[in-house]
Image (cartoon, rainbow, N blue to C red):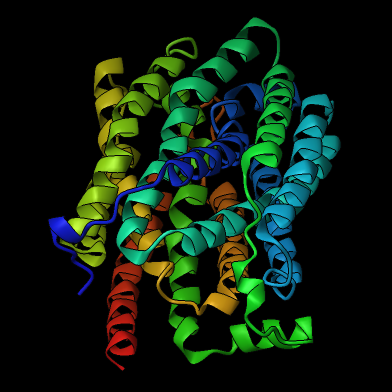
Length: 412
């Protein structure tokens, strides 16, 4: 079991707290870059005169590029100081975000999302590898919980401000502002983070290709890779069209949209650390099951909702994201226990790659499932919700199998 007693719970050092803060900032920047596409979708669609299918392609372009990049870099992911690797990809991510802010056409935005995905898609896997290297398994639920508060911070600060900047000027400004903020964050990380190279003391495989092949074909990892495919479906299936659905179907004003994200973010910023503590205390798998059940219920309610008040839509969003957090945090904590130290970088890179590729497919599929009528309303959004429910149930079964494998490996 992974249930430590209260007295055995390790305490964070001052440097570990600083590292968690820096990793959370990186997640904030990467998540916000992706999340901005959803609320700005209601503005980008008419501004560039593109269809929902084309917008789904733009969203999926990031995912496919990130997936390909993850696979290409997986063989090298454990051969360098993780801090240097992180800063390299983060610099490319900032340049891609800047390009997004300068894009003036569908083709230019599509190319910008490809570049952003090539670099940004690897950052999350490096962050997880660093967190796994620097924190004991009994601390990782809390670590993942704090890192996931970056998601809430993007809701509280990034998305409402992004929508405000878009309404005040245009949709390009939020991406330009994010690129400027990202530069400052990157400089701080370069200055304060220590090298993360303990894994280099362990003998490495000479061939990057062999390292990748051994990670991909490791039987203990296969279920983890498959579970990521199903878990990634939810965000990419629903999120790209959430703002358009909220405005056009639920009857919420575009100017009221930031309120939903603001309240949801304020609520979930407290949920992340709490879920992390509960996962460490009561078991990662148990909390994952509870989060999945809550997510399924709220997805069914949300995707079948008709015109509603701002208060009702806000409450539904808050509870939905609580369910999502209660899945993702224990999932990441469980995944951190699967790979060997010398394969953490490649394992996380492959996981991130598969997640992005699955998300890209989900986004493209959703773009063809969801149709926009002449009145602006989205049709068949509920069908996308049913797909999310099905993949969530499959993910539960796979996570149960993975937890059994971790326990068996620990016993051996």
